Picture 1 (cartoon, rainbow, N blue to C red):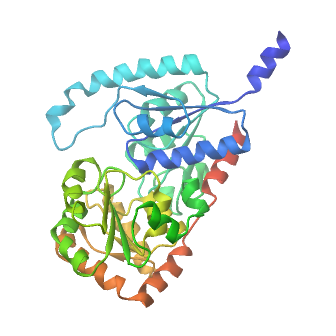
Picture 2: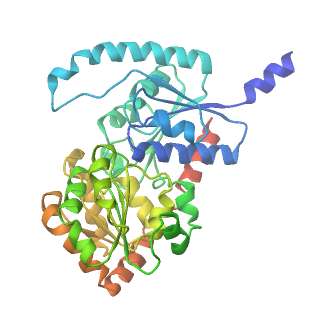
Length: 371
């Protein structure tokens, strides 16, 4: 009996928490996968926010997830926050129950609504906690949690203004394995989307939830794509999916969906990518070596998406159009870049120098060494 207990106690249990967007969920899954690759016996449980996309995407990746009732502070409609204190209290008891049942040795927080109460509870119980901050400007929750975290993994240097210097480890951002391996060729990818190998192809994405400005810019000048006989792979997000789908009915050059699970296919098919400039999008585009036109989300904290994009532009690794100019200039800029093979070749070469492919493994090894 004692030997059995010792064997059971040797199995490490880790909670991974966070989500809300693909920019949080997919790095979390990448870290979990890397942990499993190093030690297949580790038990991993995800904790997310009920109603958010992690509740769908995490099980699809083969992991169990528990949901808690938590939401963020609504800055645009203050009156909608009346229930927030009750949700915080309820989430505390939900998290307490999860910890009691799972008995984790460590918690990894990647950002998102669920991350704060879970990591904070772990810290209150002296359980080792690890944070991954993907952006160059840290979120408020991570700044608070970072003070007591075992280690804070960051994408870039200069994060001492947000976290204690002795806790910081610069690793870069974890990229999904199917993108990192890059085994799909262009012809295979275009066949997947039922598009022609003889035409230039643009992949437009506003992230996992979509981007209103980018979608409207593409829709407003969709005739330019038709005029130039350019193919379009268009990830719209749920809110714009029906509108965009109408353009694809009579145009075989347009492929539309609200969400693309096989992102490696979309990247491989594209001659140019149009994207927001979130940290994870930047990391994936660098690994794939794709010419990109960034349209940064202007309301990100401290305008960090613009800073992300500017870093790439300064190294001649990307182009950028401000959100407020996108409707007028985005599509013409795309067509212009499609006709400039030298510019695309230069961007492809330069963006590849910014790629980091082993962040997930580095984070996973460090966590396992410390628990």
